Image (cartoon, rainbow, N blue to C red; front, side):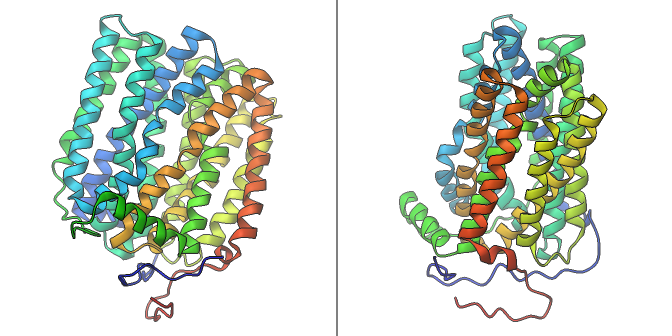
Length: 433
């Protein structure tokens, strides 16, 4: 098993955080974070509406759950360049990168809206534009997380991660409810005009960010060398490797359920239309929001690894419980609880990952995390195939069972994750650098 020794040059420990009190919104006291958070909410709101609208468009046009899984997977095609994104983020000003990403997303939304309003949109257009847009989306994820870590005081990092995860859940609630309502009552064109407006607001708000990002390495090394250094760092940090595996695990087994496959669950399990599916997705996201805020409140969380393992186990058990649920209200209650545990697990994962990674390698580690998000499109395709070839109940049972098996494998490979802890105030870092 790899030893916990970082790659030279030595860097100060990133795990020394000072925790005190209970404050879920502490990070919002910091000006730059307020603008990062607000821009993220509007951008994600647009993305979630877009995902719901396009998934329903494909399902209505083709009638195929597998096609729904494929269009969802296309949204993450850009993850294969994630190591390059990490090197870019470590090399250049992160605020500038974020502004370019916001403008890129807006330009693609305008193209989409033009096709819809001229009644020219067909399924292959959706695949092409979604795949192209995935590059901007994934670069935005890496940049936003790295910029957040530089924009807040380290004592507020747990609050910032909880709120950042919460921004996704807020956006899913709003996007699911508004997207489903607009699509059901007014149509695809109006829904896409609203999506374009949201992207424009996100771009405008991002201009107010003034934080000076911390550069990990601007010494002129090539991108390939920087990527190799990042891989070497992860290889010598077993806790970072374990947390990246958990990223893949959860993206592959449970996150597909609240993405495009929620439409299939709603339709096949309870006979709902797009409006009802939007409500179901909003309930799950509301639970995740509650879990994210709760997890971000505990600024004295010293054992994120242990919390991550336990939360992930329960998360998968609830996934198994949803499969035989015969009643819609019970399914909603299960999805809300599912969201609470999922949102909390995500915050613990990100807190542990950022605590274990110094700023010099943060972009590259987050880039590798982006590569681990490949689990989501893979899980979407597998889930879509299982639902189409067998049943939605089979899909839920297979995903839940695989997740529990992967948690057991992770414990065997990285048992130290259970005892991983962040430092208390005043403690000396005894690890070798």
